[in-house]
Figure (cartoon, rainbow, N blue to C red):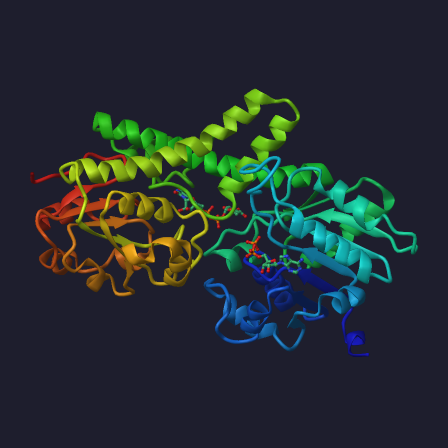
Length: 461
Ligand code: UDX
Ligand code: ADP
């Protein structure tokens, strides 16, 4: 049997943003393990086997190429791979539920539960199941109940190992993580399973960065880490609104407070709002869990982080309308960037979606440009495709527009020839920098009316 070559058989169910990069790094760092990734989506599995990967992530293709065919394999054969695996990472999607009880808040665990049942059905020997997807605290107990509801003598140990990688820096985050967290039941078999997962990461992560905890702390820590990060952005964004009223400058305020080592300087960039598949979903989850335990004040506290984010997105559009003489009907507006952040093609919960829809509601003509995210943007705006245009070249996108909105902090937007862009725009020309990445004084000199986030506007009118 070919498997004899390898000391462990690792399987990952779900070949998405979390499963794909995580397993590619494990395979690259540990040639002595066999790593297989399965998914129900056959097209995705096909793409993982080409040089045109299903997700864009700097450095990912190199890592995949190092291991693919050697000890990294992609497959749609879910059950046989479960049968052969010693350790199964589960990273299927857990979106916010959009129906029934808990709709709009709680996690939709149907993919998760289906996976649990498939694992149960296909297993003929003991397995360790690792929760990689972000899940509500206490999900492991449901997983345990499902998989251990068998009389075949097969034992499953459920371990939590949340993934803290951020998109765009996934490979770096996986190769040099701040910490790896592994939670288990505090039983002999729980601790033994936990140690097996520690051993995997110890192949390349310094031991002091691998921390262990009880399983509930591990599940909850993931939600709380994302809630705290999102809270920082909502905090600074709320202050950006105050800056715009008081002539304070949000960059100066962020710098001044960030010098306090207790506060720290990271994650204090005011913006049009946070996006991404995690922040909103995880906070909603936290809110739902708090509510379900009767902790109303706790739920309300965290819910406000999302409210401020929605406020910030809406405020951006209101500012555009107010600056452009209270009407944007029939005006052409180019949006630079659609991805929820730079260096990714991911548009899940991107502020650009809300901004585009609101501009279209106001009857503006919107042109969207982005170096990676146009295919996803087209899917997100499927119902209004007749009202928006897509143009990969930012110069062409800006032709004949009244205004530009910078929605993603792509490096290429920092160095464009804005004089050339200005010359080809309708006057007065406006620029709304939703990421504060441009040289506002220079833009003003060129002739633009400039509206940053949390800084005084500069207008010729
Ligand atoms: C996040 C967490 O960082 C990561 O640990 C977790 O595993 C998944 O969720 P991600 O969503 O990939 O990662 O991106 P992140 O870099 O956290 O950015 C989230 C959003 O916040 C983006 O829209 C980004 O543009 C925005 N942001 C970030 C700001 O607006 N200002 C900042 O200072 C930082
Ligand atoms: P994440 O950002 O959490 O990685 P993604 O949506 O990118 O989320 O990836 C989750 C993957 O899980 C998808 O590719 C989806 O097809 C896959 N998936 C969902 N349910 C199952 C299942 N029952 N078996 C195998 N794969 C699944």
